[in-house]
Length: 492
Image (cartoon, rainbow, N blue to C red; front, side):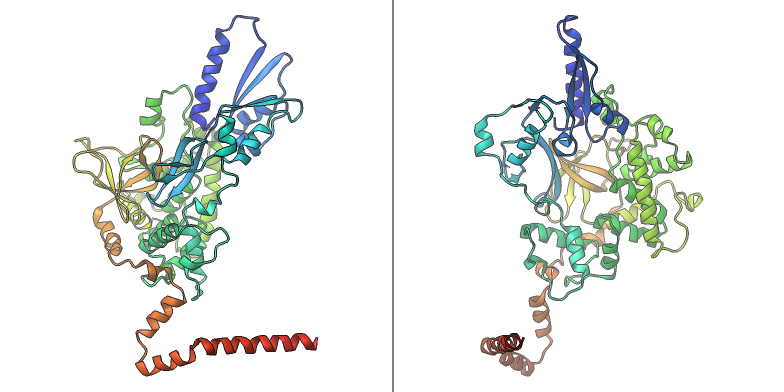
């Protein structure tokens, strides 16, 4: 199956079906879910051998393709669907969509179909320890004619802002990002999108050179938006808060809703004992959740009682500790979770200002007549706040006029996930930079450097450069170098 929700629905239907059968009409059954969000003790159950005269039904995501092997599997049902994350440069968002394996293109967006190698992996789960079969719920014609043969490299389906920042941080004058010889070259549009993102968060200047801020950002093991937020928080004096938010977002810790909860409750209500982010959004709620956990001395029982992923929260604690050690080189003063708490305002103003700078290319403006938002940037589009968000409307039922979002997710429609309310006056300097952007200058490289230098060289020197740069002179130098190389080789 494609995800946790689908697995829970199918497990429930299978249990209802088994209960409806007449007693003694079939073997005893045990139905087990298997997905990455399950606690370890729940995942281990699928590896326990079944009781005599008992049949196991294991309902799994594609985690069972290659990540693990379950002994005793005889039959595999391949549904023919897959859910994948893919960064779309045209919408500047992450696509998280369920699509049939046969689809390679839909509208103007390019999706990843299941590859034939993946289908073979699924089939290989059957009959490993005894004869078995795989039932594919799609035509054989699709497998032979429409499946892709090889996996699309991740660099061609991911945001490249972090990779481009690393290349820029090398500070080599001959690196032209748009002409760089990648092993699996991404599209030029993806590289341009990354350059624009870095420019808006001050990682590179208007000429494409890495800034001191960008050099420091490259040292942090975070995506550029979060690393820029940390550096800005260091300036505003809210480092401890920003570290917590960065750790929570980098680990993608989410609330776990039990299968007994209705879809409506799961979308609109958080567990009753958890903070609500003061109505300012999800970043603030993540901060408050971690602070509450810190006050319980990292009690695992508190996480379980509030349907939080224990393993995820422990991972967040480790990530925050590592980030704190790195930030100690830059920050002065304590970096405790609740540092200077008595002086903090309930509106978390400093933290929200830091988030606004860090997410300068991920701003949204509320529409006039409804709670939809228009993204501000290079390719505006109308999006919605994700139903699971903790952002609260005012007395008139309106959301804040402006907000930042951690990512755009396209499922049934484009959604902003993990949002936080901000002031437009904080974002105005960022939006003004869009008007001065020149993508050729941002790319850098020798051609741009020569062009800039020629603009400041007197005509007399330009003529000398032109003479020494004749093709014939270059060829003669190459020939001389070749002769010297052959002469050295002959003497050995």
